[in-house]
Length: 120
Length: 412
Image (tube, rainbow over all chains, first blue to last red; front, top):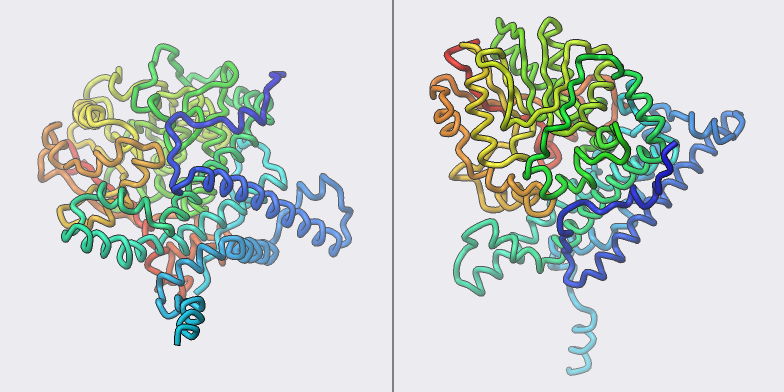
C-alpha cells in the first residue's frame, strides 16, 4: 500500500504561472476559498436530498445506501434545478452588475437625487 | 429563458478501469458542472456586452482608434469588472475540478492501478518505451491546468493521470461530449462514412490519442482495422489500454512514441488521425506530423484532423480574443500561434495536393437516450427535441466539430 499524502497531492499546483484577474490578488484568493466552501455546501445539500429520498421510500439510511443511491430522471432533474437556483443565488451580484450594464435606467443614483434635492 | 440543465454525473459512462466515485464526489462534480453552465450561459455573454458598451468606446475615446489586435483587447479587458468576475470564476472552477478529480483518483490509487494492471498484464497491445522523452510543448507548462499533466507518475506504473483526465472531462464539457466523452470520435466516424462511403482502412494511426476516448468510436466503426493509438505519456496509455480492453476493444494498440520520431514504415497506414491535439504541440511538430503523415500513408490514404477552425481574414477581433483566451490563461500556449497558421498551405508543403484537401463541419454526436431527456446536451445538439433551445444561439456554439485534412492522391 503506497502511503500518499492524498490531500496535499490532490491540491498540487499545475506547472505554469497562475494568472490573476482582479486588480488585487487578495480578492481572487478570497473568491477561490469562497467558491470552494460553496461547493461543499452543495455537496451537503445533495446528501441531504438523498437521505430524504431514502427515508421517503422507506429504505434504511446507511452510508452504503447513500453511496449506492442513483436518482431517477425526475429526482435528477429536481436536484439539477436546485443546483441551478443555488448557483444563481451565490453569483447574484455578478448577474446584477451585468443587468446594470444592460440597462442604464437601473443606474439612477439615489445619492445624487438626495444631494440634488438639498441643493435646490 | 432559463439556462439548460446539464446531465447529472451519475450518467457518466463507466468501464472496467473507472475509479470508484462516491456520493459526495458525484455531488461535487454536479455542482461544478452547473457552475460551468452558469458561467458559460449567463456570465460569458456579458463579457462581450461589456466590451461593446464600455471597453471599446473607451478605447475610441482615449485613443481615437479601434483596437488593432486581440492582444490590445486582452490588455484593455483586464480593467473590466464583468470580465474579471467571469475569468476569475472560470479559472477557479477549473482548478476545483482538477482538485476534485485528482482527489478521487489519489485516494484509491493503489486499487485503481491494480485494476488497470489486471487488464494490461501480458497484453502485447500496450507498448511502453521508457526512452521516449516528454517534448517541450508538453513539459513547459501543464496543459489546461492539469497538475502533473498527462505524464507525471505518483507511483511506479501509475495510470492515475489518465483516470483523473477521464473523470473530469464530463464536468468541464457539461456532458456535451457524451457519456464516454467520445462525441468527437463519433462525429469523425459519421463524417468519414458519409464523405468516403467505400473507405475500408486496414491500418489507422491516431496521434496524441491520450486515453483513447476518441479512438474507440473509430475502432468500433472499423472492427477489422488495426488501430495504433500513439501518445508520449505512459500513464494515459496504461489507463487508455485498460479502459479499451475492459470495454471489449482488442483491435487497438497503445504505443508510447513521440510524433516527431515515429518508427513506422512508409506507406504502412491508410488513415492518420489527430483529434484536438495539434494545438497542444508546436509549429515545428505540426509541420512534422503533416509531412510524416504523407510519408506514412498508402496512396489514396486519408489524413484527418479535428480542431477549432483557425482564423480567417474576416474573423472579428473579439472572436480572436475569446478563442486565444485558452492560450493565454488555460496553459495552451501554442494555440494562439496555431490560430494564425494556414493549414492548407502547410498540407501543400507536406506533399498533399490542393485538390485533395478539404475542410468540413460534423455535427457533434452523442449517444441518444444516454442522458435524462431534459439534459442540455440533447437539447443543444438536437434542437428539434427542445424548441426553446433552438433559439439560443449562444448556448449552441461549438455543437459542430471542425475537421480538415487531405487524401494522399484523390479519394481513399
